[in-house]
Length: 200
Image: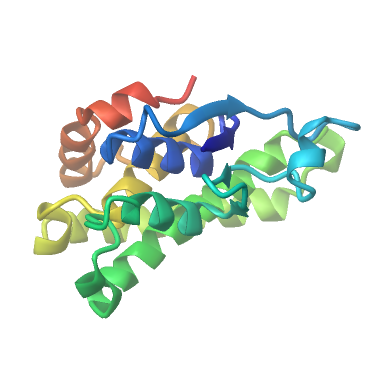
């Protein structure tokens, strides 16, 4: 299989993390794609130009990190991050959706900052900063609850990726002044899959 990524995309990073967590390094080739480039050969592979993009053993392609992560997790028949019981665990799914909302907002901020200065929207930037702070306040409380203290699932991975991209490429360190979130991130960031896929 071929997994097309960029090394700065937090969504592609999630797929790369699943490859490592599930021990799929021998089955999945990681290929760097050239995106946001006029005439990139990657557009012949994936017309949308988005990453991640996975071509499976049958030659079928799929995009969207949620779909790809679920597919990779299920390959061995024993999904850990998308276990059937979790599909009807609404507390788990709410937590995953909230973590993804944080990641989405930070990604909007990052994309906006990559625009020329005269094309950036101060309103969008300010909105995403305030939103990320509100969500971080909520996670400061929820990391002490059983779901985020228990077995690592997609909410854990998404939240860790969101916090790390905010600190490295986004509006700033969202763990600052939040001691429980700081400790939680310090612990989960020691997972080999997160170390190996750290943002440049």
